[in-house]
View 1 (cartoon, helix red, strand yellow):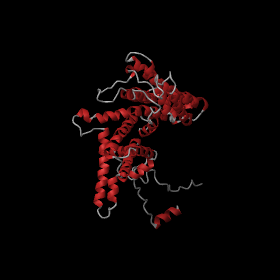
View 2 (cartoon, helix red, strand yellow):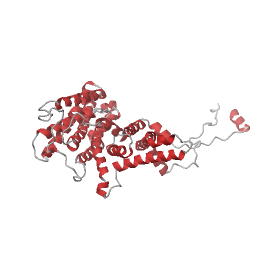
View 3 (cartoon, helix red, strand yellow):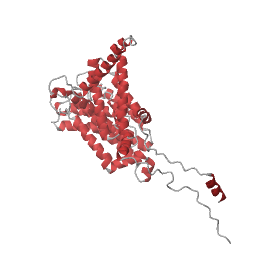
View 4 (cartoon, helix red, strand yellow):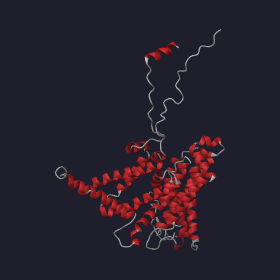
Length: 433
C-alpha cells in the first residue's frame, strides 16, 4: 500500500508580489497625506476657491473692465491691467476694512478694523457653537433665528424693565437671555425625544413663531414696546445692563466677545472632557449603538438642544446688550441665526474651528462695507462668496479633484513585480507531476 501521492504546492508564497526594494512612505509623506485628506484642508481650500470665484465676479462687475473688454483684441494689456486693479483693489479694501488700515496714522487707529471684525464675529461664534453642538449629537438646529429673538426679548425686557445696580443688572439680563434661548430650543428637543418629530421642521416653525411673537410683544404696551411710543421698538437699555467695552471708548468691541470665548472653552470641555459630551457624540455617531450601550437617546436629544439654545442665546444677548443699546426691533437677529449654520459647517462643528470660522465671516462683514464704499464692489458678492464656501464644503470630492488631493484612505501604490515566465520544460514537469 503506497502512501498518498505528493503534489507540489503551486500556491504562491505569502510574501509573493511584495517589493522589498520599494521604500516605505516617509513620515513627512504620511503627515502630508493626513493633512491633505483632513477636513481642515477641505475647509481652507473651500475658502480659496470661493475667493477665486469672487475675484471673477468682481472683475465682471467692474466698469473699467467692461470698458476695456470692448477693444480686448486690439490692446489686451488694458483689460488685464483693469482686471488686476479691480481684484487687488477690492481685496486690499477688504483687508483694510477687516484687519488693519495702514492708511491711517498710529497703531491704535490702524487696528480698529480688526476690533470691528471681532465685534461682528461675536454673535456668529456663539450661534455657530449652538448649531455645531447639535450637529455633533446628530441634530440639525436650524432654529437659531428664533432662539436669538427669544434671547434678545428676555434680555431686552430685563434691560428696560428692571432697576438693578451694575453688574447685577447686566448679569441678570445675560442669564435671562441664555435661559430664554435654551427653553426655546428645548421645545424642539422635547418634541424630538417624546414624539420623534423632525427637528428641522420643528425649529423652522419655531423661527416663525418666535418672529411673530416678538412682533406682538414689540407692538404691545407694557411688554416690550417703549412707553408712550407707537413704534414696534423697545426703550433704550439701562446703562447698568449694557455690556461694557473692553478696549476703550474709541472701539465698539464689547464684553460679549469675552462671553463668546468663554462659550468656546466651555463647549470644548463639554465635548472633549465630560461624560455628558461623550454621550452626545456617541448618540451623534450611532443612536442605535448608543441605546444598546445604555444611553438614553431621547434624554440626550433634549439636553443637547438645551445647551445649543443657551449658546445661541449668548448671540442674542450680545446683539441686544452690546450692539443695539438704544432699543431694538424685529430685525435684531440680522440673519445671524442662518449665518451660524455656515460658520458651523466651515468650522466642522469643532469649537476651535467655529471660532476661526466666526472670525473669518466677521472679517467678511466688516470688510465688505469697506469694499463697497471704496471700490464700489456690490456687497452681494461677499454673500455669494459665503454661499460658495458652503457649496464647496458640501462637495469634498470636488475640492480634492480640483487640487489633485488624495481621497481619504488612499495609499501610495507600489508596483508589484510580475512572476517570472516559465519555460516549456518547467510547465511540462508541473503538468506531469
